[in-house]
Image (cartoon, rainbow, N blue to C red):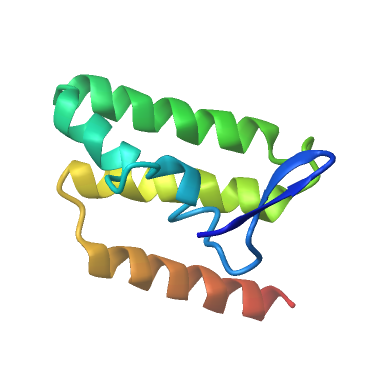
Length: 106
């Protein structure tokens, strides 16, 4: 991904997926997230994932990008879920159910 330098610093290209694939996490071609998973034991990696869920949920109201922070929390929660034997199709089913529930309230 390309970056543009502004007086505030580097900004990501508009098409970049900042939640799931930020380019600054793979500066040498290998995703830093996967490298950490390979290097850490399961308990340490699960702790890392859990800590990030807590961090992003705790701050989502205060940084000006609540949806982005909640998406990041979900990213880490989904990885924690999958790393502990969760089924990917259940994530989709749960999201669909939540969306249906939300529509009913509206």
